[in-house]
Image (cartoon, rainbow, N blue to C red; front, top):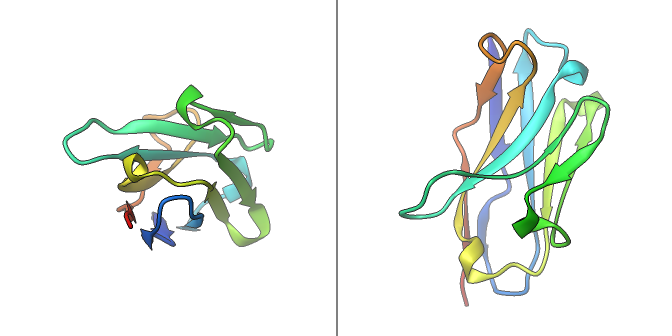
Length: 119
C-alpha cells in the first residue's frame, strides 16, 4: 500500500512565499517514481503545475515558470513545491501525484493541501 500526503498549505499574503511538501510512504522504491504537482482552484478543473522525474529533471506548465520550483529529496521520500510571489489567483487546493509506467498500476494521489492567498 502506497500513501501520498501533502502538507505546508495555509494562508499567505500576496507577494509571499510558501513551500509545500509531499511525502510518499509504503511499499515503493521512491527513487523510481516521477512526482507531479497539480492544483485545482474553486470552480475550475485540476491543472498541472509541473513535474520532477525520477532522474531529477523538472518541467513546468508555462503559467508557473519562474515563480514555482519543484525539487525532491529521495532520502526522505519527499517532493517539494516552492512557490514565490504568490498571487490571489494562486488560491487553490494543491495535489501531489506519484507515478511511473505503467500508469495503470503506479499512480498515487494525495488528498491535497489548501493554499489561500489573501490580504
